[in-house]
Image (cartoon, helix red, strand yellow):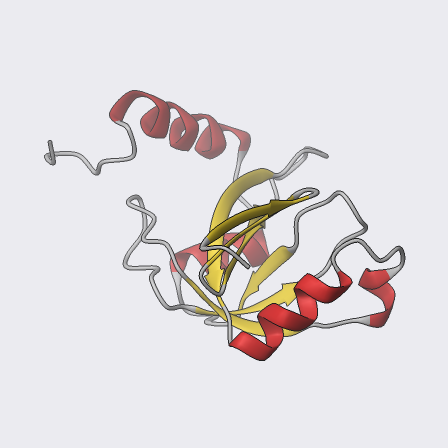
Length: 136
C-alpha cells in the first residue's frame, strides 16, 4: 500500500490507521469526537486492510491493540497512549478506546464531559488552531 492511501471511510499512513476517540457529552446523544491516528503493527495493519470492505467485520474481527499517534494540545501528552481499536460497520471509522485510565483524555472518555466543556474545547481548538495558551 502507498504511504498514504484511502479506502472507503479509512485513511492509512505507513502502518497507521485513522479512527475516532469518542467522548460522551453528558445529557446529550451526540459525542465530542477526535479524529486521530493510531500506530499499529504491520500484521494488524494488513488484517484490518484485508477486511476493510467486509460487511459484518465489526462482529468478526478485533479488537486490536495500537498506540495513539497524535499529541492533542489541550491534554497532557497523548502521543503513544495505549489503545484498543474497535472496528465499526463498513463506512464508519474505527473507534479507539484508551487503556490508560489515569490520563485526562481516558477519564473523559469513560466519564464524559459537560456540554459547556465541549463548547469550550471546540471554541479553543477552532480559534487557536489547537495551540495551548501562550504558544504561537
